Length: 246
Image (cartoon, rainbow, N blue to C red):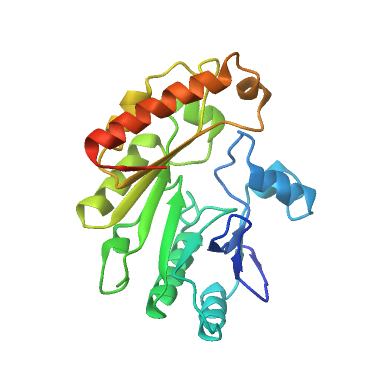
């Protein structure tokens, strides 16, 4: 696949945590719209949607991260993969392979990693010989309806497969979580949040949040009341299961 050069890889995000983004673009082509795509287009890192959906890999990313961590006086406790792309992107095994290398590099220098994907996790991540630290792995899941996924996350992994791959890591002893955001309003899809919660009831932590940057969602009547009610459902579910709720 096409590669690009960078002088640095590790950075501290505006949200306060350390990140690496070892690819530009994402084959999943989410149409929420995707904030990362909007920023990439604004700043000239993607010409258009089609260009964004053809990701480019940062060449020598593992060596770059190794050098940056080696020279840090105070290493971060954890690194996030990724904030503006997907570490286990469907259709791009080169990106998944590089993600595994980056996690191994970070763990080798005493730094844990957290990952978030709409793709499929490789079971190799549960290998404590290769990945000795307590890394945390999560999926983004806002529905169980494949029609919805094909409309809004057209290139991402099917929901059921996404859940099964995460469950395999959980069963192997890995810490796992689910991001139920951006959660759609009923005018976008009528669905039962409880069914989604049951599907990821094995995780250690659940994040829940509403849908922004879309007039259909932000213009929904009583939007705030709707999300307050859904958040209460998530809170009760997590309290009953001993799951951390954010």
